[in-house]
Each structure stands twice: as C-alpha cells, then as structure tokens.
Amino acid sequence: MTRKILVVTHGGRQEAVAGLREAVPALCAAGFEVALHDHDLAAEMGTGSFVLDEARQLLDGTELVMVLGGDGTILRAAEITHGTQVPLLGVNLGHVGFLAESEREKLTETVQRLADNDYVVEERGVLDVRTYLPGSTEPVRDWALNEATIEKHERTLMIEVAIEVDGRPLSSFGCDGVVMATATGSTAHAFSAGGPVIWPDVDAKLLVPLSAHALFARPLVVGPGSMFAVEVATRSGAGGVLIADGRRRTSLPVGSRVEVRTGDTPLRFARLNQAPFTDRLVSKFNLPVVGWRGLADEAAAHRGEPASSTGEPQPDTENTPQTPQTR
Image 1 (cartoon, helix red, strand yellow):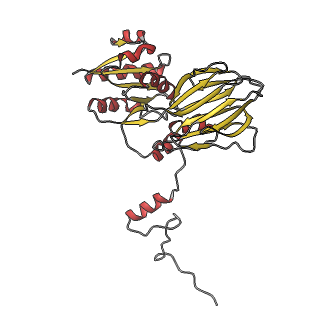
Image 2: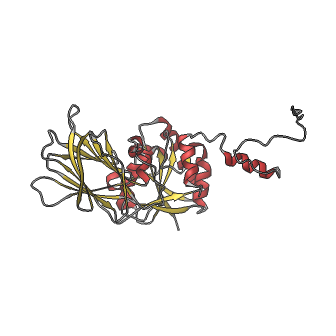
Image 3: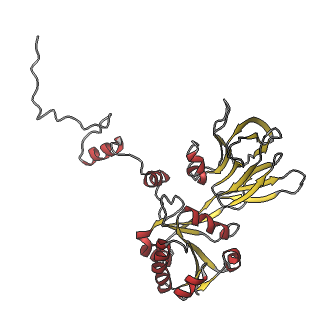
C-alpha cells in the first residue's frame, strides 16, 4: 500500500527550498507518495500539489504531514491537521524551533526513521476560543495550539479588561494585552511575558497579563475544566484585537468578550526521541548547566569515589602535605 505524506514549507526562503530539494527525493526513494503545498515547487520536484486552504480534503489516507521550517511554519501546517488524526513532524530550519522534532542536519536520518515507522505519536492540548461581539449572540469560533492573545488596537492607548475564571470575576485593569496559553505555548509568547514554563504533560491553561497597570496582575494557571474569560471593558478608551497563534485576527470592539476553554480534540505530533522535556529546554534555550552538581556526582560514581555534597571535587588528602599544627 502506498504511504502518503504532505510536505509544508516556506517557499520564499532559500534554506527551506534547499531542504525540500533534499527531502523530496529521499521520501520518494523510501516509498512515500509526496504532495507539496507550492504548485511551482511541486512542478520542479515532479510531485503532486495542494492548495493549503483545501489540503484537509487530501488528508484521507495520509500518514503524516512533514513541516520544513520554524515554529511559524509548523503553526501554519497545524491549521491543516487540526481536528484530524494525522500527526505533524517538524524539521527545524528556523531559530529556536521549539515545536520541531528534528534539525536540518538530521533530515536524511529523519526520512529513514519515518520509512521504518520508527516514531511515536504524542498529543498536545489546544485552546477552544469563542469571541462574543457586541450585539451578536453567536460566537466567532477559533482555536490555538500555542496561545490566544488579546492586544490593544491603538499603540498609544491601554486596553481596559476584566478577567473572569469559571464565571467568577477576578480582577480588572488597564494593560497592553493578555496572553492565554496552553502548556505547549508556555514557552512562546507567554514565556516572553514572564509566565512560567509548564511541562507538556501537565493538562493546564495559563493567563499572563501584558504590562498591566495593577498591583495584582500575576500569571494564573488553571486546570483543564476551567474557563478564562476576558472582556474589553466598557470604560476602555479603545478596542483590541484577538490573535490566535500569531496567525488569525479578530477585531474586538469595546464590550467584546473572549472565552477560552480546553479544546475537545488535541493536536498530534510525531516524535522521534523520548528525551525528557528538561533536556529540550536546555537545548533550545542553550541554558547553562556547566557546573551542575549531578554531573560531578555521576563522574565521581564512575570513578568509584564518594559524591561531594557540594558538587566540588573531593580533596586528595593522601598526597596533600599536611600543615603542622601549632600550639
């Protein structure tokens, strides 16, 4: 049976096109039927093509969507697979690439592991976003993998918001905006705004105010059954805008209300390695771990020496001259 794979990339970036020229022949040689989102690139590669907005129609029988690019391209591809059982696999061609599973230099190995079915599928929770505009009873529906952000519309004016949790008022203040994120999105915009990092296996949602003019405007973490609601207060001098995953925008006039819940259908990702999330944090953010006591203790155990309680090497008392005691 033919194995189908869709490849999404950023056709306007030279490094993405170079990666595509390497990936497509390797995928075809491994027995995959490949389709690309860019008609011109598809013609050059001799593959089928699809329009991104119509790509969901092609997911029947598709094993996987491979993404060549950074987190922005992965979020773009997530719009195709959201609500389906087809997993995404990202090959990082960007900078941090927190959502990616592999790097550019491991592209050949990645293709081989896909061919060998040597991967597992992991589910990540999403946000269900409903916006109620003034005068309308039906919500504007959206979703987000990383975050739904309410931002001020006017650069020179704050936006006044009222925050609810589970239908109960919590606080109101003027601010530049509010970020509501998943655990996956806790390392994205919410992280830059000073929010905590949430491990991806924690089923939680996060709210982080942006530059709030208030004494109580701390990040909030709630469980999967809770709901955040943010209203653009009637006293606000300006409206705002809702941005889902940095891609989809909804204008928020004064009096608008945004409700954020845990989505019913998670997004699926193909994973090639099961390294702890801590290791991913260290790698992606290049965190300093030199001098970590655990490494010193492991080295000492390997040498058969007792571990140091301070992480410093134990002194060699046998070969160190002793200082005579004085009375």
